[in-house]
Image (cartoon, rainbow, N blue to C red; front, top):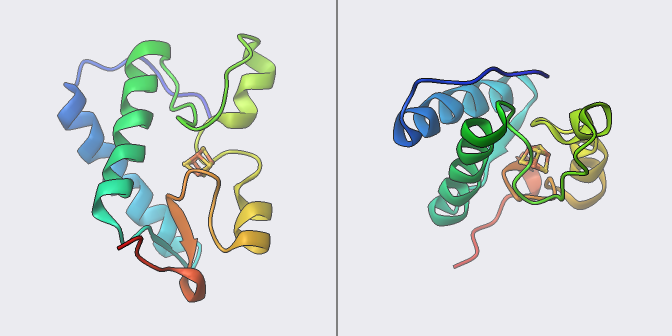
Length: 105
Ligand code: SF4
């Protein structure tokens, strides 16, 4: 997934990414983390990476600075399906399998 630089503010971009993530979750029989605080923190991290790098890199992983390798960690990353299958959620705790969702509180 290759995004492009944006002229949106961070808050606007967070809402754009939220809409995308909600749609992605619906289409893949997943849900977003029900914990609003965690969910918003991940969305904000994705927005900041898009503003900084032009790509929604995973905020929970380290970029290597090599575009081909870093493409693996553009959200939705190459690892999320396997993680959701094994753990019930992706590494960032953004996407959850429906039967594995729980709040942190
Ligand atoms: S771990 Fe989750 S939030 Fe992070 S890039 Fe992968 S799918 Fe996106």
